[in-house]
Length: 209
Image (tube, rainbow, N blue to C red; front, side, top):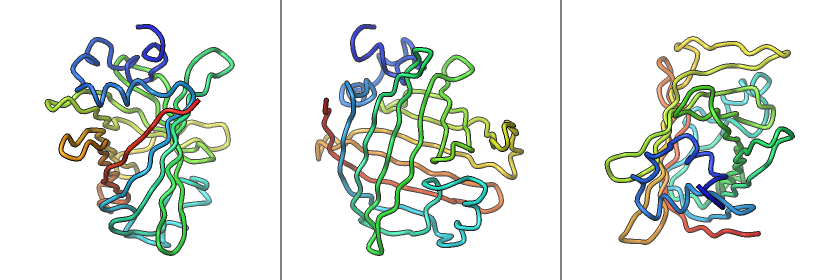
């Protein structure tokens, strides 16, 4: 791989399987030169637990949990490539959701995983929640991420979370040929609580230097 593709965290995890992505998904997965900016509408987004999510903020930090839930909500996404001190590449994402009662943001970063075919996903400003994501291509040529393990980082410790305290995350990045828009669907669920966060919608995007 050369150029932009060589700096894609998704292509690095997928290897030859990246050839199975449909062209529009491959272009998006190739990543930004410096950043990608997108805008669209979530058909559904947020958490049904509302302000109960604030109870977890002291543990996980800001810009991770959402305290609202809505339908047909506008949003903005920005993806940036960041080169670390050791020369590795990370993809940093900021999603701003324009709820009627005010904007809410959630942020994360993706970098190469500790196993072939995986990415490490670090969530929130405090970077206390870490997931291992398995990267694959669906039959439709979409990009799919599925969590396999979760850790909580506190006081310099990396604590494995048992399944009952963890969340199962699945994200699918696709394309709607009828509208010409990129699509995204994500769900985070806990075995006891059910769905704790979801979003599903479509957007248009562009690369910016």
